[in-house]
Image (cartoon, rainbow, N blue to C red; front, side, top):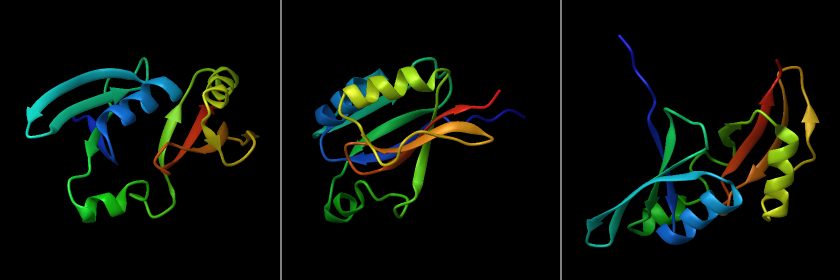
Length: 130
């Protein structure tokens, strides 16, 4: 048997703002943007080179969902973005205005730094140790 984690939903306040942030500031690729009618869209983004897992950007549709935007993991790091060149991607993201919550640090498992996306979700940018 073979299984793959394909998509992870991230609640957002506006599809176009989310697409601009994830493709611009974070450098992701827009993989799909399909109109589903009634104001709903199927919007998928993924880091360049990602073959299996991506994000489904889901515009919050009610007050309960809007209250969870940016806090889907209770304030913990919930997303882990691996890179093959930490310095390159960190510099590009800083230049694009991404808010890093700490200076890069070198751990036994990776070079890593925590950042927040435009919605407040915490991410690790990390280059795994070889």
